[in-house]
Length: 340
Image: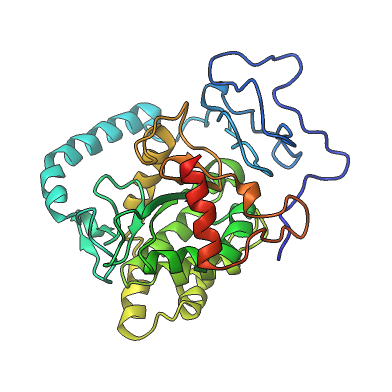
């Protein structure tokens, strides 16, 4: 199992700077055992520490704070004024067609059957998307009355997400198939958007959403994490449109549909809306109110209760699973978290 990257030798993390003590209600007074403040590696000198108002209260082992860049430089052409006008125009257009889009979205009880829902402008809403576009939801036709709702926030460029997903991804899928859990995949993109500053988190999430249109989210999700690049290196289009699709068993007409979806970026709007909803909402996880939006990955909730990532993996190399990789073992851990 690949080891998550570490800071360069001699690097001393500190947050916030000594001469800038934390202020505001969002800064946590305490941290879990073993927590260390995240630092800012020298390869990202232009970035600034994140605002304390959005700083999450507790984090799992290995968490690194998202690095927020300074204000972007002025754009060419009409500048920011033009951009703001453009945004207003987009909002007005969106309001005009919202009724049509609402009619085309799937209901929350709809399972992934390989049929995408078309919307205007060549964009699609994947069949497993919830009506408010905060996640992809997966449950079997024989879901049990006491099924647990598991919200998983992950980013395809997050090393610790790979540490969790590689051993446990197929076990979560098995629990969906048995009807024991309802799985909500919150495909996050801020590692690429804010930290690494590339578009591979978004493109990987778009590809996984396209895989949902042909009923292959879980095998594609597993393929992407099984082949996760070193943080910062990014994926390639060859991997996302062809290699991972082949590993996930997508072929024939389904492959044609998947690749058309990926090449046309047909799930771009959905992925961007999903990230926006998750990065601004404090009640998106089972309706439980948090002190701030979830801005760390991996983060897992079970019926709204936070699952301790340390209960799933060891906290030192080679980061082995703590549980037997069986449905019974993982379900017991999830039930214990829900009852806590």
